[in-house]
Length: 314
Image (cartoon, rainbow, N blue to C red):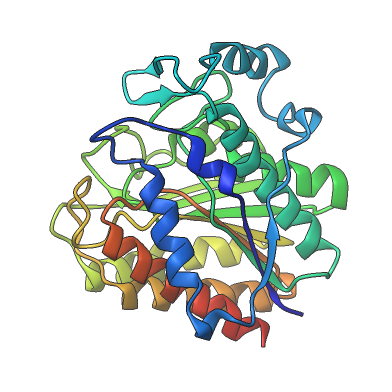
């Protein structure tokens, strides 16, 4: 079974404006990196629009409708700010629906055995969106929605999300907090936006595992956090599907973080997660793009990540 790559040109139409770090060029450089001949073995498909009934597993119909109605009516209309960090342009709603739709489709393909694993190269990201609030560039909580869909549609009893973005995924944590059969684990920098992710935050059922790191920490500290906290907790939880919130802004060149990882660290981590998925969940992995704002670091790190997914599927 192949590795599935899901993306869509509509994700480029989410125009965040001059100087905003979450810009369309992020997706362009990932697309260019994955166009290299060494990725010829990917199965490529366009991300569908998400079914709103599936989004409603996490967000209310009123929340979805409010975002839809906030979209500027024409390409020439000025952007609106949904929060202090999250602009919306004409085209943003479709981009967000495609990003969410990609995660849902990836779950469908992996859970039915049509793909071994999948990577969703989409934007906007999702892990800061809480049940009832847009936050931190994020509209819908893509990974959390995908996890709940896996349980509702495919009977996955337990689903785990592992997040290695430099920023803590407060949205995923908030959505999972009271869910006994959903697990969230995160490595991230603290202190840093959004301010959550302390060691003491463990979920209502000990189903949250945070491994905060300090500015300046690099590959050694990152690997230690995975080996000492994330992987043991993930192993103890057990899971039928692993979803990765793949943020590459812990890269040493990223302007929004202070960690000093390199592409090799992301490859190492992907190997560890894939190996765990093989042991626990027949190798079922869905990875969704989150952050990563240095274009070179993002392209190289995403390529390293996808290379390991492809190796596992071969």
